[in-house]
Image 1 (cartoon, helix red, strand yellow):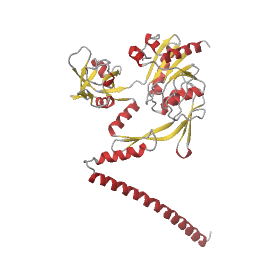
Image 2: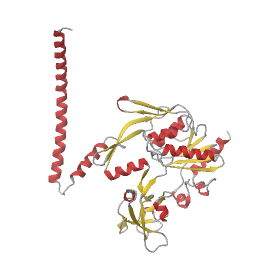
Image 3: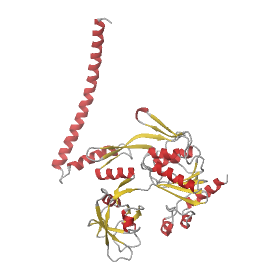
Image 4: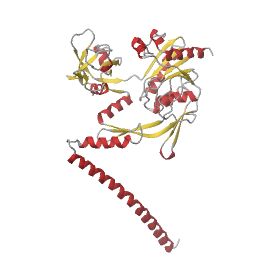
Length: 414
């Protein structure tokens, strides 16, 4: 190429570059003007609003508003809430092993202030070892009352967050129990508590039950261990898989669980930004391959739980019993921010093996069965999480579980 050609090429490149720069400048100017307008608005609010305002709160609210207008699942999480969310996702944290329910649910004792109720105790946790019991009332934490003048001061989740902390640290709880005239103090030492996400038991000969409460970082391994135990007890002739009220969690763990029941084929297709496509497929060797599955679902079955249910259903591996699922067809990614807060941002959409999107649609079960009524719950019902080798009497109060067991019995004889 001649020197003149080089010069011509350079000149053409310079013209194209200048044109691109000229096109970019108006966009940058508009962007900077928007930032300036935001800064002006912030300043005007701080200087002129009728009450004194907190600048950090204003900025957090601005970020929250920005994500709120994207979609219903994207959100801003302040530091304390984000830390708790990450702990829930990991499934392990420093704490005392208590799950609380709101105090206003205690209609049976209207004379007692609405103290948060001990709803669950993790086996072997500091709270259980110290002698706390289900339905105990949490009156105070380190002297801070949970209810005053007949009103709960914070939601149950906020008190749970206060119970968490570094392993080895102490926390003192004032507990009120039926039959006690005054609250009693329990000083507990926090330790690493692993939240159980999987419960398995034998329902009746050759029929196993597996409940997945949520998908955390250990759920795939926990399901594998539970299936191995059921197999050892000769309880994998048919399996009732309970995904009711499972809000989802880590999608990768739902894929690992599906892989336990599928030998091949697509588990889920994930479509990201700019047309990126990721197909997750099953591999041979899962412990649950060939086991007839009856999956229980309802309106609380969402996200990763729906991915699992749809994968098993689309491949003909499971019959679904219960109610239509929630209908969440998007994947969220969590991003850490420098101040300890975080973003939950929708980053992809997923499709079932048959190419269906579940967003706002959910999955329609093969057999629709309504749940038990609130009165029946009070009377003592639900699948529970015990280890009995036969169906419990209270299982009969759960019509969805009863229908699933009936189908499991039929599957045994096919």
